[in-house]
Image 1 (cartoon, one colour):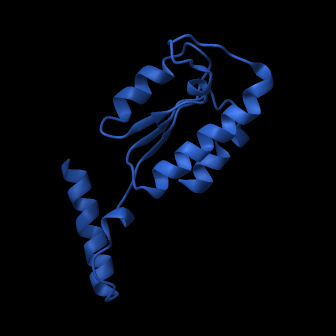
Image 2 (cartoon, one colour; image 1 turned 180 degrees about the vertical axis):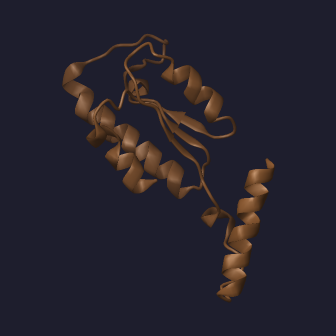
Length: 119
């Protein structure tokens, strides 16, 4: 843990102690959500893997990966793929996984909105 994290934990402890709330449960401590944004081939996946060390990288593209490692994109299933990835993210958030990196293009704000709202 870097010194900034310890400072944040100390700040949270001081706030909760002052309010007589006691220390926050570990699942309430600061979590990290990274939302990658950019066009295909811009390095989002590489950066996501670096940022999510110890956590999870979730990509809608995973929906189209077959067990044999072949990527089979189907534009008719894109809505289902996004809902599937959003559900995986929600599950990770509920389990307290941190950090979580969402590795999608997210070129429009509305594409990232479900992750921000649930994260």
